[in-house]
Length: 372
Image (tube, rainbow, N blue to C red; front, side):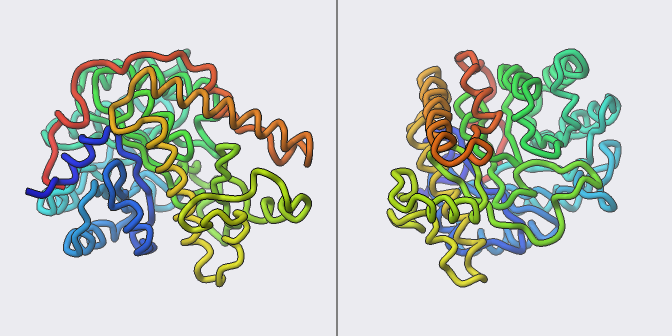
């Protein structure tokens, strides 16, 4: 009997997912993520329709649908807004890996909204509470104690979406707050994340999703930009564990074509300099950059986690990766200028994390799920 997406994910440890707009799903990205330890988060109102098509085509790994009603300026709804039962029912009928209600945004200090999302999710009996949070909810001296108590009391799995104008885990208190949350005996997922998704898996998250472009790698504040207009392509530069603009890498390679860090082993670059991504036809560059980044992250996930759950060994391996990335960044900064190569704040924060054994209790394989 073929494994379901749930069983496949559980057999190889935490899942590193790719988060992509439902209308921009690239077939090669589908093939890349249709493997144990990965999966997809389809985003937007059209996500259910796309999920149905992928299942009909034989996709075997975890599929989630995120309606993202918490985002934007005009379409954003508050956490007090009722869930759409049709949205929930269709996920059940499809047998998706988890049911994600279309929850609204939890503003700073909106305790009633937070408790409402958790309560309504618990009443569903088979769902994950989507908590799209103002970043102050992770501040130890502000709302974090309330958040931890609310999640512990509700005892339902949660999927976090963190709002900030840049990488939210680059903020020290948010990084620290996340680690405290991952110690709770409830399953925790991260949506709209970047490289830190791998670190979160090592420290106890059951799944984490990396956005295919910058607006899906965190939640921009309403009216804060970042979600509209043309974007310059950014790609994962594996030696520094950070996303860099493709034009930045092109300039660096041009300045030092024989540099030791430029060749990339991903299936797209095929051991050529990373700048081959820019040599594709314009219509193909964005998709190629997404596959490049996800391929490298899946390799990194497999390297630090292997085929087991989060552990102290995985945590130490991830911390070592971050230390190496910072050292490479320092070397490149000395050679080419510090502004371009300074290690991301999150990479520095991970190096200071204290290792711990993830809590016993409900896990990714024991919580309620459907067939895929």
